[in-house]
Image (cartoon, rainbow, N blue to C red; front, side, top):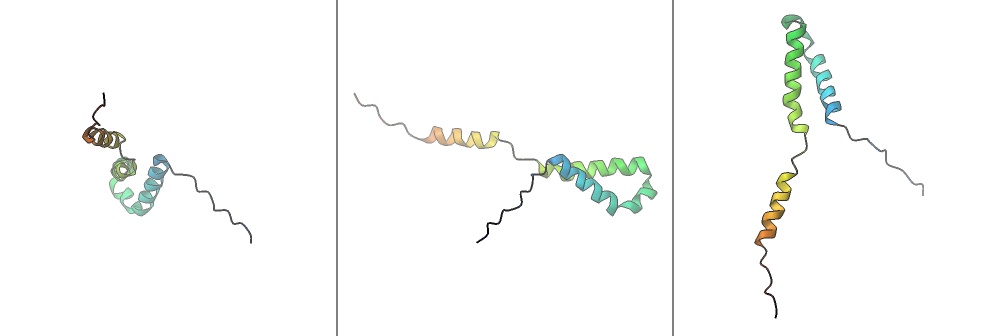
Length: 82
């Protein structure tokens, strides 16, 4: 039997994903560039990338720690023996 190694795919950062989104929007909406003008078109593309990029961020860690603190507070303490 031969051993097959899985290809290692590097994790994409949010900046690279945003760059890919921006490139795809530029190519998809190329006709609008002539209608709007270069500056307005670029500004609207940047705004759209920001909106799409909001979902790419990881959830905040503070929510999980708060749940752990609440769960720890609900656990009753054992009575001390003397």
